[in-house]
Image (cartoon, rainbow, N blue to C red):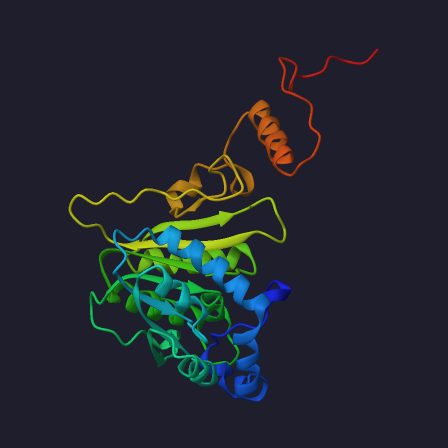
Length: 289
């Protein structure tokens, strides 16, 4: 799996990876991961952003942490005043979390096999750098689509009505984004994909912000991404009827002038020197003599 250099050493892997994980992800390596100042900084930053997007109404909420690893993300949940339960497929990482005496409870679980919780248990859910592993098919019997459906079905069941889940992940390509978001929608979730700093190569982060239904009087407001003034980075679910109204290659049918203005706006966000808009912007030039 391709991911940013600082996050290639991730904690949650499919069950088909267990043998390899035992070879390369030893107890000593798990301790190095947990004590690395760089990893702690990254995990803390991502978790704090996920908690912000989770937008829980009060501090004393019951939160599920999927791919909790050594408990770095759980520490942020504890500091935010929440009670949490973590699950991970790596036994060594969970052992390290016990040694560090994290506040939350941790269990050994493969999310692709479903979450073993009663319906309506959690007020919210966070996951840091985990769900992309569900998209891998390492054996002939591994089916990413079925694993994703099993995961999202059990997650929807585990949340209270109107509960929100914020899943930070690293999709490899647009097809993977479509696969994951379509599976979430099929299982009943609403919401969509949020991209922080969409114009940056290194700082770009993907968050799948989804919610399980809606309580009476509850209004789900679309969260705003960081690093942009517009909302063009928010990917929403769409059906085939919506796609039919788009032009070639799935692009919206917009005028040439609007296209030029949008391109110049993107270049300004990247820090490039772009001429100011005028009445001559995108105007057709006359014939040359």
